[in-house]
Image (cartoon, rainbow, N blue to C red; front, side, top):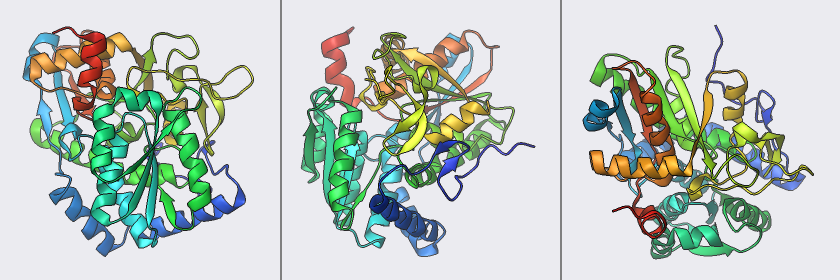
Length: 398
């Protein structure tokens, strides 16, 4: 029987995807991080400390909620894994706490990170404040204006915010500038990446800390329903929330698993951030994955109404799961996400993040095609506080 929930080989590859495509000095540092992580991930004292923080600081376990109103309307039984209820409002706190503790164990004094929608930035700034680390957060100028509430939160938490003003001024440029800064400070700082992307060992590290979502969700769903879901659905940018919940169900072959990428304004290059749908194999930010590319092979611009999804690449394990056909990767456009944002808010009293709204929107459309009573579990990766001002200004429908 095929094993789906694999870990990378010693060179950081999931099949042909992943790896470490960086200069030698940085590669040596990344391998040190990998060695330290592999020691700590099974260390009793480390996990006791992390488990304490996840429970008493972050508020885990996050519950599963049955959306009875939507279920009646759409015919399927719709459930949400409520990562929006975590401290800081998203799944990002899971890996941020783990990465901060890893940095402390490595005697680093600063965390350098990038952020798109700001949820990773807020979570890293929160973890840095808690553990006494300095914190530099890089954010694209477009995203910073769009997600002003999160910029203010990061500042209140003590983070130093550096605005990326080059190129498209979004997530890719924030990653570019954060990596350049880290090159000059890697002896005293650590890089806390915001998704299951980047050079090895980052996809492995972030996946490990996010896998708690799937472990909890599988157990909780069985307890509530005495069965497993028919479908597990999550939104896709780099893919951290998705891999987190997918890990809990990959070996359950009767569970259909779907990752929802942002189609944005359409299929044309630069109008979406659907790397799986329209990308080609290439190297981006030190790892091999499906990448949205211009004709000359350089990474193209990416776009999504959700700042946390507008990245031109995707995590290497997702690429592997696509190629072996264990996970289906689909798309949802801006309008689908906006409609779902309002639908979930008004029908269930839950305001979702624009990122999560892509998964909700696809699930609602899918439910109309399924047999009545089919069970759908959606990973609600974050809450929509950060998006309210932007949505009301640009898509107000109250």
